[in-house]
Image (cartoon, rainbow, N blue to C red):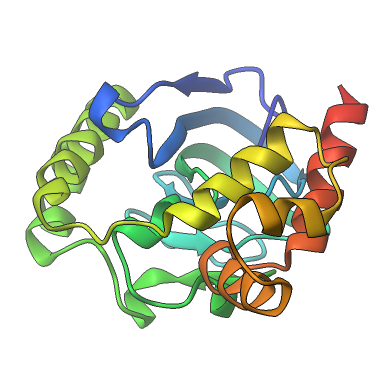
Length: 216
Protein backbone atom coordinates (compact mmCIF):
# COMPACT_ATOMS: atom_id res chain seq x y z
CA UNK A 1 0.00 0.00 0.00
CA UNK A 2 1.07 3.61 -0.55
CA UNK A 3 0.77 4.35 3.15
CA UNK A 4 0.87 8.01 4.16
CA UNK A 5 2.78 9.09 1.08
CA UNK A 6 0.03 11.48 0.08
CA UNK A 7 -1.77 13.99 2.25
CA UNK A 8 -5.11 12.62 1.09
CA UNK A 9 -4.34 8.93 1.76
CA UNK A 10 -7.27 7.12 3.38
CA UNK A 11 -8.23 3.58 4.27
CA UNK A 12 -11.78 2.24 3.95
CA UNK A 13 -13.09 -0.94 5.55
CA UNK A 14 -14.86 -3.55 3.40
CA UNK A 15 -18.26 -4.86 4.33
CA UNK A 16 -18.27 -7.55 7.01
CA UNK A 17 -18.75 -10.44 4.55
CA UNK A 18 -15.45 -9.54 2.86
CA UNK A 19 -13.38 -9.12 6.04
CA UNK A 20 -12.02 -12.71 5.88
CA UNK A 21 -10.50 -11.88 2.49
CA UNK A 22 -9.91 -8.12 2.24
CA UNK A 23 -7.64 -6.24 4.65
CA UNK A 24 -8.72 -2.78 3.51
CA UNK A 25 -9.45 -0.56 0.55
CA UNK A 26 -7.18 2.47 0.23
CA UNK A 27 -7.27 5.68 -1.77
CA UNK A 28 -4.60 8.26 -2.54
CA UNK A 29 -5.06 11.66 -4.17
CA UNK A 30 -2.55 14.40 -4.93
CA UNK A 31 -1.07 16.55 -7.67
CA UNK A 32 2.62 16.08 -8.34
CA UNK A 33 4.67 18.83 -9.95
CA UNK A 34 7.47 17.25 -11.91
CA UNK A 35 8.13 13.70 -10.74
CA UNK A 36 7.78 12.13 -7.32
CA UNK A 37 8.95 8.74 -6.10
CA UNK A 38 6.79 6.52 -3.91
CA UNK A 39 8.01 3.44 -2.07
CA UNK A 40 5.67 0.50 -1.52
CA UNK A 41 6.92 -1.48 1.47
CA UNK A 42 6.39 -5.26 1.76
CA UNK A 43 3.53 -6.25 4.06
CA UNK A 44 2.83 -9.86 3.11
CA UNK A 45 -0.28 -8.87 1.17
CA UNK A 46 -1.36 -8.77 -2.48
CA UNK A 47 -2.81 -5.49 -3.74
CA UNK A 48 -4.88 -4.67 -6.79
CA UNK A 49 -4.43 -1.04 -7.83
CA UNK A 50 -6.50 1.23 -10.07
CA UNK A 51 -5.33 4.60 -11.36
CA UNK A 52 -7.86 7.29 -12.28
CA UNK A 53 -5.30 10.04 -12.85
CA UNK A 54 -2.37 10.47 -15.21
CA UNK A 55 -0.35 7.42 -16.24
CA UNK A 56 2.58 6.98 -13.89
CA UNK A 57 5.97 7.90 -15.23
CA UNK A 58 7.11 4.35 -14.51
CA UNK A 59 5.03 1.25 -14.07
CA UNK A 60 2.55 2.30 -16.76
CA UNK A 61 -0.61 2.22 -14.64
CA UNK A 62 -3.32 2.55 -17.29
CA UNK A 63 -6.45 4.42 -16.13
CA UNK A 64 -9.37 2.26 -14.92
CA UNK A 65 -7.53 -1.04 -15.50
CA UNK A 66 -6.45 -3.20 -12.53
CA UNK A 67 -2.79 -3.85 -11.83
CA UNK A 68 -1.80 -6.51 -9.35
CA UNK A 69 1.08 -5.91 -6.99
CA UNK A 70 2.25 -9.34 -5.91
CA UNK A 71 3.54 -10.20 -2.46
CA UNK A 72 6.89 -8.46 -2.11
CA UNK A 73 10.09 -9.35 -0.30
CA UNK A 74 11.62 -5.88 -0.74
CA UNK A 75 10.26 -2.41 -1.39
CA UNK A 76 9.03 -1.36 -4.82
CA UNK A 77 9.39 2.15 -6.22
CA UNK A 78 7.00 3.94 -8.57
CA UNK A 79 7.49 7.43 -10.01
CA UNK A 80 4.40 9.60 -10.45
CA UNK A 81 3.77 12.81 -12.32
CA UNK A 82 0.71 15.07 -12.64
CA UNK A 83 -2.63 14.11 -11.14
CA UNK A 84 -2.50 11.16 -8.75
CA UNK A 85 -5.85 9.51 -8.08
CA UNK A 86 -5.57 5.89 -7.02
CA UNK A 87 -7.63 3.17 -5.40
CA UNK A 88 -6.34 -0.14 -4.07
CA UNK A 89 -7.69 -3.41 -2.73
CA UNK A 90 -5.34 -4.82 -0.12
CA UNK A 91 -6.16 -8.51 0.23
CA UNK A 92 -5.32 -10.38 3.39
CA UNK A 93 -2.55 -12.95 2.96
CA UNK A 94 -4.16 -15.85 1.03
CA UNK A 95 -7.35 -13.75 0.63
CA UNK A 96 -7.06 -13.29 -3.13
CA UNK A 97 -7.02 -17.08 -3.63
CA UNK A 98 -10.73 -17.07 -2.85
CA UNK A 99 -11.31 -15.25 -6.14
CA UNK A 100 -8.69 -16.68 -8.53
CA UNK A 101 -6.92 -19.97 -9.16
CA UNK A 102 -3.74 -18.40 -10.54
CA UNK A 103 -0.82 -19.32 -8.21
CA UNK A 104 -0.04 -16.19 -6.20
CA UNK A 105 3.68 -16.91 -6.31
CA UNK A 106 3.58 -16.06 -10.04
CA UNK A 107 2.95 -12.42 -9.04
CA UNK A 108 5.63 -12.18 -6.33
CA UNK A 109 7.72 -9.00 -6.55
CA UNK A 110 5.94 -7.97 -9.75
CA UNK A 111 3.51 -5.27 -10.92
CA UNK A 112 1.30 -6.81 -13.61
CA UNK A 113 -1.58 -5.61 -15.77
CA UNK A 114 -4.36 -7.95 -14.62
CA UNK A 115 -6.00 -7.92 -18.05
CA UNK A 116 -3.00 -9.94 -19.29
CA UNK A 117 -3.68 -12.82 -16.90
CA UNK A 118 -6.77 -14.57 -15.56
CA UNK A 119 -8.82 -11.82 -13.97
CA UNK A 120 -11.45 -11.79 -11.26
CA UNK A 121 -13.21 -8.86 -12.97
CA UNK A 122 -15.58 -9.28 -15.92
CA UNK A 123 -16.37 -7.04 -18.88
CA UNK A 124 -19.43 -5.49 -17.24
CA UNK A 125 -17.26 -4.42 -14.29
CA UNK A 126 -14.84 -2.62 -16.62
CA UNK A 127 -17.67 -0.98 -18.55
CA UNK A 128 -19.28 0.39 -15.39
CA UNK A 129 -16.21 1.55 -13.43
CA UNK A 130 -15.47 4.68 -15.56
CA UNK A 131 -19.05 5.86 -14.92
CA UNK A 132 -18.37 6.31 -11.20
CA UNK A 133 -17.92 9.98 -10.30
CA UNK A 134 -15.84 9.59 -7.11
CA UNK A 135 -13.41 7.25 -5.38
CA UNK A 136 -16.13 6.47 -2.83
CA UNK A 137 -18.48 5.36 -5.60
CA UNK A 138 -15.70 3.26 -7.14
CA UNK A 139 -15.09 1.54 -3.79
CA UNK A 140 -18.80 0.77 -3.46
CA UNK A 141 -18.77 -0.65 -6.99
CA UNK A 142 -15.81 -2.93 -6.18
CA UNK A 143 -17.27 -3.89 -2.80
CA UNK A 144 -20.60 -4.87 -4.38
CA UNK A 145 -18.84 -6.81 -7.12
CA UNK A 146 -16.75 -8.85 -4.68
CA UNK A 147 -19.79 -9.48 -2.47
CA UNK A 148 -21.61 -10.93 -5.48
CA UNK A 149 -18.62 -13.20 -6.18
CA UNK A 150 -18.85 -14.80 -2.73
CA UNK A 151 -21.39 -17.35 -3.94
CA UNK A 152 -18.75 -19.02 -6.12
CA UNK A 153 -15.46 -18.46 -4.31
CA UNK A 154 -12.68 -20.98 -3.73
CA UNK A 155 -12.26 -21.60 -0.02
CA UNK A 156 -8.69 -20.75 1.10
CA UNK A 157 -6.76 -23.60 2.72
CA UNK A 158 -7.62 -23.37 6.42
CA UNK A 159 -4.23 -24.78 7.40
CA UNK A 160 -2.49 -21.88 5.66
CA UNK A 161 -4.93 -19.39 7.21
CA UNK A 162 -4.06 -20.93 10.59
CA UNK A 163 -0.32 -20.62 9.87
CA UNK A 164 -0.68 -16.96 8.85
CA UNK A 165 -2.63 -16.20 12.01
CA UNK A 166 0.05 -17.89 14.14
CA UNK A 167 2.87 -15.94 12.49
CA UNK A 168 1.02 -12.64 12.87
CA UNK A 169 -0.14 -13.28 16.42
CA UNK A 170 3.41 -14.09 17.51
CA UNK A 171 4.83 -11.14 15.50
CA UNK A 172 6.99 -13.42 13.37
CA UNK A 173 8.87 -14.86 16.34
CA UNK A 174 7.35 -18.37 16.54
CA UNK A 175 9.69 -20.94 14.91
CA UNK A 176 8.34 -22.16 11.58
CA UNK A 177 8.63 -25.78 12.70
CA UNK A 178 6.14 -24.95 15.46
CA UNK A 179 3.91 -23.08 13.00
CA UNK A 180 3.82 -26.09 10.67
CA UNK A 181 3.14 -28.48 13.54
CA UNK A 182 0.25 -26.41 14.92
CA UNK A 183 -1.18 -26.07 11.40
CA UNK A 184 -1.02 -29.88 11.04
CA UNK A 185 1.42 -29.83 8.13
CA UNK A 186 4.76 -31.48 7.49
CA UNK A 187 7.53 -28.94 6.89
CA UNK A 188 8.08 -29.58 3.17
CA UNK A 189 4.37 -29.60 2.32
CA UNK A 190 3.87 -26.50 4.48
CA UNK A 191 6.52 -24.55 2.57
CA UNK A 192 5.16 -25.59 -0.82
CA UNK A 193 1.48 -24.78 -0.31
CA UNK A 194 2.25 -21.63 1.70
CA UNK A 195 4.26 -20.20 -1.20
CA UNK A 196 1.52 -21.19 -3.68
CA UNK A 197 -1.17 -19.40 -1.64
CA UNK A 198 0.70 -16.42 -0.15
CA UNK A 199 3.26 -15.81 -2.88
CA UNK A 200 6.41 -16.03 -0.78
CA UNK A 201 7.98 -18.59 1.53
CA UNK A 202 6.95 -18.91 5.20
CA UNK A 203 10.44 -17.73 6.16
CA UNK A 204 10.15 -14.55 4.07
CA UNK A 205 6.62 -13.87 5.36
CA UNK A 206 7.76 -14.33 8.95
CA UNK A 207 10.68 -11.92 8.45
CA UNK A 208 8.38 -9.28 6.91
CA UNK A 209 5.90 -9.68 9.78
CA UNK A 210 8.66 -9.33 12.37
CA UNK A 211 10.09 -6.26 10.60
CA UNK A 212 6.73 -4.52 10.38
CA UNK A 213 6.03 -5.05 14.08
CA UNK A 214 9.42 -3.62 15.06
CA UNK A 215 9.04 -0.70 12.64
CA UNK A 216 5.91 0.71 14.29
